[in-house]
Image (cartoon, rainbow, N blue to C red):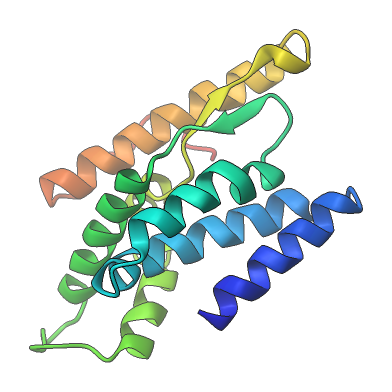
Length: 171
């Protein structure tokens, strides 16, 4: 919880000062929320907390022309799948994993240590927002590519298989 509070504070400060690190901090907060969502759910605070963060905090760390495309339930679902994959990634599955060990494995999964499928599946989902003016072609192309890679990642995660990646996987 301390890490979550710290990232929220850093994101707010970064957005206020218009730092170049704002999007990176927002992405780090997204990753922490995916890792922690199931734990927050067990404490019975996930849904209201996630809703507040999605509505008021995460938008501070979005790139220009983007808005949040994930709900509280999307975070819980991603967290559930990430927890399952963390357990399955062990060579000798245990009955349980301590939180610190499980969080470390989930972080490695999100960072692509065990394959790009999980990394792409766990990327934040955005919708394009033209309120700031016309959306540049390069933003449209990157959004389309990231969406395609994310869809491929989720296909792998949901099928419990590693499938060949799409052509031009440069993420």
